[in-house]
Length: 156
Image (cartoon, rainbow, N blue to C red; front, side, top):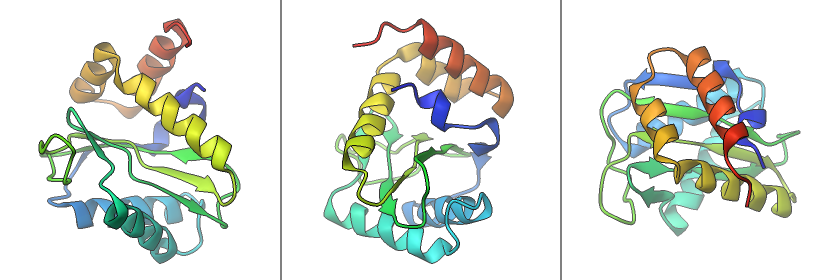
Protein backbone atom coordinates (compact mmCIF):
# COMPACT_ATOMS: atom_id res chain seq x y z
CA UNK A 1 0.00 0.00 0.00
CA UNK A 2 1.33 3.41 -0.95
CA UNK A 3 1.10 5.74 2.05
CA UNK A 4 1.19 8.97 0.03
CA UNK A 5 -2.32 8.09 -1.19
CA UNK A 6 -3.63 8.40 2.39
CA UNK A 7 -1.54 11.46 3.26
CA UNK A 8 -2.34 14.97 2.02
CA UNK A 9 0.14 17.87 2.05
CA UNK A 10 -2.09 19.67 4.56
CA UNK A 11 -1.77 16.67 6.88
CA UNK A 12 2.00 17.17 7.19
CA UNK A 13 2.99 19.25 10.22
CA UNK A 14 6.62 20.32 10.48
CA UNK A 15 8.08 21.88 13.62
CA UNK A 16 5.17 21.24 15.97
CA UNK A 17 5.84 22.55 19.50
CA UNK A 18 4.94 19.41 21.49
CA UNK A 19 7.16 18.69 24.48
CA UNK A 20 5.87 15.25 25.46
CA UNK A 21 3.85 12.26 24.35
CA UNK A 22 0.60 13.56 25.84
CA UNK A 23 0.92 16.85 23.94
CA UNK A 24 1.59 14.90 20.73
CA UNK A 25 -1.49 12.72 21.24
CA UNK A 26 -3.65 15.80 21.88
CA UNK A 27 -2.21 17.52 18.79
CA UNK A 28 -3.03 14.45 16.68
CA UNK A 29 -6.59 14.22 18.01
CA UNK A 30 -7.18 17.93 17.40
CA UNK A 31 -5.76 17.70 13.87
CA UNK A 32 -8.08 14.81 13.04
CA UNK A 33 -11.06 16.74 14.41
CA UNK A 34 -10.11 19.87 12.43
CA UNK A 35 -9.76 17.76 9.27
CA UNK A 36 -13.25 16.33 9.84
CA UNK A 37 -12.00 12.77 10.27
CA UNK A 38 -13.73 12.75 13.65
CA UNK A 39 -16.29 15.02 15.23
CA UNK A 40 -14.90 14.59 18.72
CA UNK A 41 -11.17 14.97 19.25
CA UNK A 42 -11.54 13.35 22.67
CA UNK A 43 -12.67 10.07 21.08
CA UNK A 44 -9.53 9.96 18.93
CA UNK A 45 -7.34 10.97 21.88
CA UNK A 46 -8.81 8.20 24.06
CA UNK A 47 -8.25 5.61 21.31
CA UNK A 48 -4.64 6.73 20.86
CA UNK A 49 -4.05 6.82 24.62
CA UNK A 50 -5.55 3.35 25.12
CA UNK A 51 -3.28 1.96 22.40
CA UNK A 52 -0.20 3.54 23.99
CA UNK A 53 -1.11 2.03 27.36
CA UNK A 54 -1.19 -1.41 25.75
CA UNK A 55 2.23 -0.96 24.14
CA UNK A 56 4.15 2.04 22.91
CA UNK A 57 3.93 2.78 19.20
CA UNK A 58 7.46 4.18 19.31
CA UNK A 59 9.05 1.52 17.10
CA UNK A 60 12.64 2.75 17.29
CA UNK A 61 14.98 4.73 15.11
CA UNK A 62 13.23 7.96 16.09
CA UNK A 63 9.88 6.88 14.60
CA UNK A 64 6.41 6.37 16.12
CA UNK A 65 3.13 5.18 14.58
CA UNK A 66 0.35 6.12 17.02
CA UNK A 67 -2.85 4.56 15.72
CA UNK A 68 -6.45 3.85 16.54
CA UNK A 69 -9.67 2.71 14.92
CA UNK A 70 -12.78 4.87 15.07
CA UNK A 71 -16.38 4.41 13.96
CA UNK A 72 -16.34 8.11 12.98
CA UNK A 73 -13.60 7.54 10.37
CA UNK A 74 -14.87 6.87 6.86
CA UNK A 75 -11.45 6.06 5.39
CA UNK A 76 -7.89 5.49 6.54
CA UNK A 77 -6.09 8.76 7.21
CA UNK A 78 -2.41 9.30 7.87
CA UNK A 79 -0.73 12.40 9.30
CA UNK A 80 2.96 13.17 9.42
CA UNK A 81 4.34 15.17 12.32
CA UNK A 82 7.84 16.35 12.94
CA UNK A 83 8.16 17.90 16.39
CA UNK A 84 10.35 20.95 16.95
CA UNK A 85 12.45 18.82 19.31
CA UNK A 86 12.50 15.00 19.63
CA UNK A 87 9.86 13.71 22.05
CA UNK A 88 10.22 10.92 24.61
CA UNK A 89 7.75 8.26 23.45
CA UNK A 90 8.64 5.14 25.47
CA UNK A 91 10.12 3.74 22.26
CA UNK A 92 11.32 0.17 21.99
CA UNK A 93 14.91 1.39 21.63
CA UNK A 94 14.58 4.02 24.37
CA UNK A 95 15.28 6.89 21.95
CA UNK A 96 13.02 9.92 21.57
CA UNK A 97 11.05 10.25 18.32
CA UNK A 98 11.35 12.95 15.70
CA UNK A 99 9.05 11.43 13.06
CA UNK A 100 5.47 10.60 14.01
CA UNK A 101 3.02 9.01 11.58
CA UNK A 102 -0.42 8.84 13.25
CA UNK A 103 -3.12 6.69 11.68
CA UNK A 104 -6.89 6.57 12.13
CA UNK A 105 -8.66 3.64 10.51
CA UNK A 106 -12.40 2.96 10.26
CA UNK A 107 -13.59 0.60 12.95
CA UNK A 108 -13.72 -3.07 11.90
CA UNK A 109 -11.22 -2.55 9.05
CA UNK A 110 -8.54 -4.83 10.47
CA UNK A 111 -7.05 -5.80 7.08
CA UNK A 112 -6.78 -2.14 6.03
CA UNK A 113 -5.24 -1.29 9.41
CA UNK A 114 -2.53 -3.91 8.92
CA UNK A 115 -1.90 -2.82 5.31
CA UNK A 116 -1.40 0.81 6.36
CA UNK A 117 0.91 -0.18 9.24
CA UNK A 118 2.93 -2.39 6.89
CA UNK A 119 3.14 0.43 4.31
CA UNK A 120 4.36 2.92 6.89
CA UNK A 121 6.88 0.43 8.24
CA UNK A 122 8.18 -0.19 4.72
CA UNK A 123 8.38 3.54 4.04
CA UNK A 124 10.32 4.18 7.25
CA UNK A 125 12.94 1.56 6.43
CA UNK A 126 14.04 3.78 3.55
CA UNK A 127 16.82 6.08 4.85
CA UNK A 128 16.23 8.56 2.00
CA UNK A 129 12.63 9.08 3.07
CA UNK A 130 13.61 9.50 6.71
CA UNK A 131 16.25 12.04 5.71
CA UNK A 132 13.70 13.92 3.57
CA UNK A 133 11.28 14.10 6.52
CA UNK A 134 13.99 15.23 8.93
CA UNK A 135 15.27 18.00 6.63
CA UNK A 136 12.06 19.20 4.94
CA UNK A 137 11.14 22.86 5.14
CA UNK A 138 7.84 22.71 3.27
CA UNK A 139 4.91 20.27 3.64
CA UNK A 140 3.85 20.26 -0.01
CA UNK A 141 7.40 19.68 -1.20
CA UNK A 142 7.86 16.87 1.33
CA UNK A 143 4.62 15.21 0.19
CA UNK A 144 5.88 15.27 -3.41
CA UNK A 145 9.22 13.76 -2.35
CA UNK A 146 7.47 11.00 -0.41
CA UNK A 147 5.19 10.28 -3.37
CA UNK A 148 8.08 10.22 -5.84
CA UNK A 149 10.31 8.04 -3.66
CA UNK A 150 7.51 5.65 -2.78
CA UNK A 151 6.58 5.26 -6.45
CA UNK A 152 10.18 4.29 -7.23
CA UNK A 153 10.49 1.82 -4.36
CA UNK A 154 10.21 -1.85 -5.28
CA UNK A 155 7.04 -3.24 -3.79
CA UNK A 156 7.36 -6.37 -1.66
